[in-house]
Every structure is written in structure tokens, then in C-alpha cells.
Image (cartoon, rainbow, N blue to C red; front, side):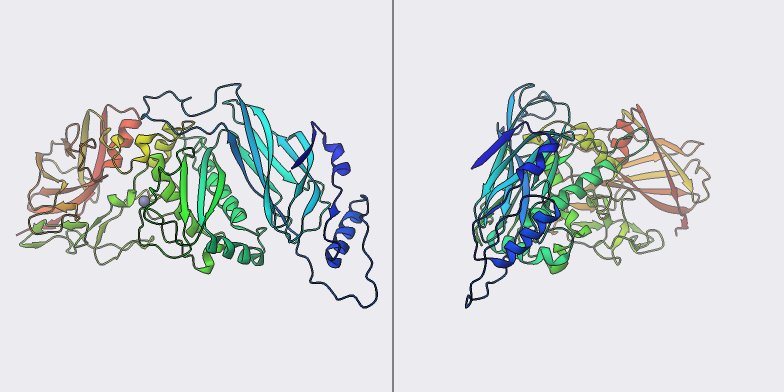
Length: 531
Ligand SMILES: [Zn+2]
């Protein structure tokens, strides 16, 4: 129930916040509220007096909480196409009436009536009123606005003049970008309750799963905003994210049967949190959170990683090259034994952990959220996100991991090979090894194998260059069996010595996206004698 006082102004706030306490038994609450009201110079609610012989009451814990701002109407499914649809598809029409709804939660075990609220658009109050909030439940407070594709900042505040004394004052406002992509979070009851039990004790302004989620969304938006790259992305990632709603489910029901990205196509991204650990990583990652996960921590960036798959991003850790891992193996030999782990291709340590330094020979250097460094975005990811900026999620994008952009390369690609000192290796024999399907007898899920036979062989010119052609990866992302991004292994033989290097497909994409008709690459290899 909403008693809205339309089109108020800031000066009227002190008149709005009259609290009528429905539970006069709660003496402490009343005293707290009285003190709060006095400190604001407001009207003083009547405090009940305890008669002699009355039992002392359990202190009432008061908290009002703004969970999220949803776009209640119209709800529109995400776009069907893949960049061939219009950028307006899936959004309301310019000027169309849109109903926003703030989700106000009353965590108090008592109803709160006449609670003031305010809506602000780009910092100006556009609506104020009072709302009755039943005990331990939530209430939607609507606002109608005409839709515009111009980004506006919409904010909802509960108890805007701070008349009500709460155990947590840091969760009374949510601010969103009106044109943000929408995020839905599904969570099972047990974990949802655990968040409410734990969050406030952390002392970081939170008291619920919703507050935790809003904190994460602010961090995700910060990551986008700060992903600035001179010339290529001077304003960072342009889109913003908005928590559209949280939905709870009985424990054990967020299971494998849920199609993980199509279950609600009215939101651009979705993630689920079961109470118990699930083994289906494609669907809901490990949400049996250890206690530290309740803190705002970098680990929670993992959820954004998973959701960005719905925006068409693929895992960039797939560009890393390992030996003898279930999904990756190098069969190339030198002097009769495997090169991986030898002086030709030593195992490397990585600052980002990864999956074992006893087998890693190459790690994609521009680490970001889609690989192992969760605190930043790779240039490749930034440019893809901005290519789709302002567009709803599209059906084809969400069909991870088969993405046409992997095939986008310059019409010609020039590789220059040098020694470690940068001297061009004139006349070198350059062998290019693609990863391919597993050899006979290997498990079929092992999809990255580099055989002992080069797929392409070139002779370097006097300046150390070879022309690799348009698509040396022979990559056909439209093929149903396409497994995602890959890395070429390059063998350079020069005057009885051999060195190895790596060329990730992302480098070719980036050259194309820079507008280069001929991509330019340099590999400086460390040469060792061969027998
Ligand atoms: Zn992933």
C-alpha cells in the first residue's frame, strides 16, 4: 500500500517521516525511535509507559532496506538476432511509459507505517510519499517515467530524512542507470537466510543478500567504468548493470533442470545461488560459499565472469597452453623427446595461479576477468562489450561458447621472427602448429592437441617476416564442433638452432578491430641447438 505524495520537493521531507509504531510492546524500539525523531527535530511519537510488574521485552531490531529497483513494465525478452537486429530491439520505445518499482524490505519483526520515501532522477526529487511496510516482508513502491535511451540516474531512498533509527543505515538507497543491462539473481532460501544472519555483523553497511548483491553490482560497474584504454576505449566499458530482482527458491530446487540462461529472457544476465554445493559448473557455480565470500571480496567477481558469458564473452584462459592436461597436450618433439618442459619450451610460473606450474608453457599475457585476473578486463573483452554496448543480450550471444567474432582477422597477417636480442632471423624455417582434435585413443573431451607435424611451413624473408595468410588458425567458428579460442605454437629454426613461441587468436582479432588490413606480429624466440 502506497500513500504517495506526488511531486514533492526536498524541503518537504521533514514533513513526511512520521512513524507510527504498531508494536507498542517494544519499549527499546520506541525509545530509539524517539531519540531519532528528537535528533531530527521532528514530531515525537508517543512512548508507551511500562506499568509496574510488566515483563521486560526483547529489544526490537529495526532495519529498512532497499533491495533493488526493477523495471516492472514493460518486461521484454532479449533480442533474437546477432547484431543484425536493431539496437532498439528489446527496449521500451522512446517516450513509452515505464513503471519502475523499488523493492523496500522491512526486516523489522513489526509493521512500520507511514514510512517516507523519495525518488530522485539525476539528483532531483521527482516523487515522495509514505508507504506502509508490513512486518518482515517487502513492498513495491512504483514510479512511472517516460522511457528515453539517454542514460539517467534513478535513485530510491527509504526514510530519506533519517527519522527512523535502524541497526543498519547504509542500505536505505539504491541508485541505478536507467539504461543499464538487467541482472537477476536466484537464490535458495537457506543461503538467502544465511546472508541476512551474517551480513550485518561484517560492519560494511549490509544486512541482506540484496545488500551484498548491490555491493557487487557497484563493484562490477566500477570495473566497467575503470576499464579505460587510450584511443580504443577511452571511457571504459560503456554499459552499466542493474540488479533487476532477486528471487528465492526452496532449498534443493535450483538444480540441473533449470536451463541456466534461458529461464528468464527478460533479464540480460542471470546467476543462481543454491544453498548446497552443485557439481554442475555450467549452470550454477559453487555457491556453497565459505564465510569469506560474504565479505566484499575479489572472489565474487567470479559471478560476473559467469554472467559475461551471456554477453558473448568466452573464457580467455582457453588461450593458455598446457602439457598433459585433460584438455591440452603438446605432442611436438625435438631431439627425440617432447619439447614441453625442456629448454625449448620450459614450464612457467604464473602470478595468477592457474592450474599447475608443472605443465603450463604459455599464459595469455593480457590477463583479465575472463582468464585468471579477476580485478581487470582484457582489451579483447572491453572491445567486445563495447561493440554490443546499449544493446540487449541477444539469443546468439548467450549461446556460449560458439562466437563468430573468433574468425575476425585481417585479410593478411605478417609475422616477424627475431632472436631474444631482437635480431631478425633471415631465412628461418617457420612452422605453425594448430591445436586439433585428439589423436586416436585419447579422450574426446581433450580438445586442444598440438601434433608433431606443423600445419604450415614458411621461409622467413631477409627482415625475418613471413606471411601467414588470412586465417592461419583455419578457425571456423560457425562449425558445430568449434571449441572456442586457440593459440598457435610457432617453431623457428635458424642455422641449426630452434626456438618456440605462441600466437593467440586474440592478437589477430585485435589487429582486425584496430582497422589493420595487414596484421603485424613479432615473436622473439630463444634459440637452442638441435642435433
Ligand atoms: Zn568462464
